[in-house]
Image (cartoon, rainbow, N blue to C red; front, side):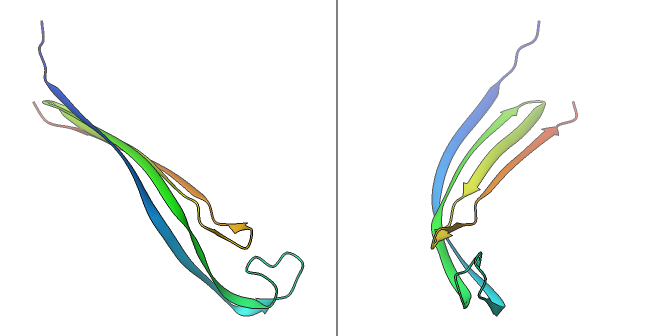
Length: 91
């Protein structure tokens, strides 16, 4: 028979996101990402994330994910990240 103690945490967060994107040469094409004849633009949006941790006497771990969603003039720079970690303690 084994006994154990475990502890866990859960977190959710949001954050503002601002990114200045620049190019040395203006793009005048039909699909110009920054807009016609523009060399820089500030994208603004928000980020969302969630994480959880767990700790026992023998091991611990973490898992989290985050997404960022800035946009400007109909162009979007979305990103989605996942991460994890597991650690074992010697007995």
